[in-house]
Image (cartoon, rainbow, N blue to C red; front, side, top):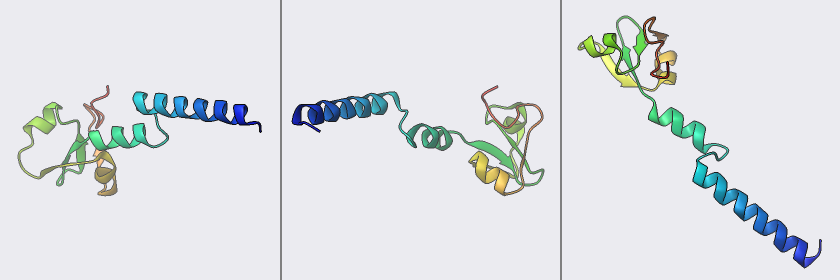
Length: 89
């Protein structure tokens, strides 16, 4: 590769990297941020997990903890039939 081609390729790589960082779409970044930001209310007695704003999560005062959806599933949790376990509906 000639020096000019090498510099052009390097500049293109830097521009793509900066654009990806600005948009939050790095290889791992967006998926990790989405999971880290999302929490659910998990009822340890009924084993159902809810979006925190779900009517059933709001009413839950006993036996409820805030966890990630993945952790709720690992504990044997199933999504609520009303909210689906997510606020994205």
